[in-house]
Length: 130
Image (cartoon, rainbow, N blue to C red; front, top):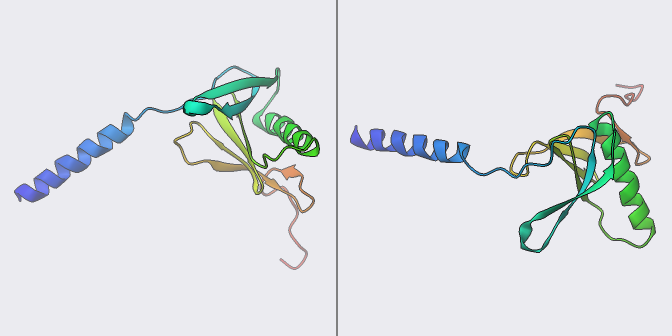
């Protein structure tokens, strides 16, 4: 019984420490879209891209346009990171993912269509045979 109690105390302590872990949060400015760059030493630099945007999808579209423009100019970054109203945005080959902090698991916000454009998941029509 004492071993079981020690295990329960250890699990509770580790859960409490996990809840207090430091989170890397993006700026929460309303309507502002940022391009996020990881600098030497692991610090983040937030470069303002556009202001007065209505939603995360519009910010993601602006970041995607910036990514494509850089690739056309000879850049090599296929994946980029941004931020919008307290959420990180991750533009990747599969689509756009978002998370409230860098330590959280990102979830899918936009998917890529067959021609590479971005769309809301579920908005694309399914094949006729399905």
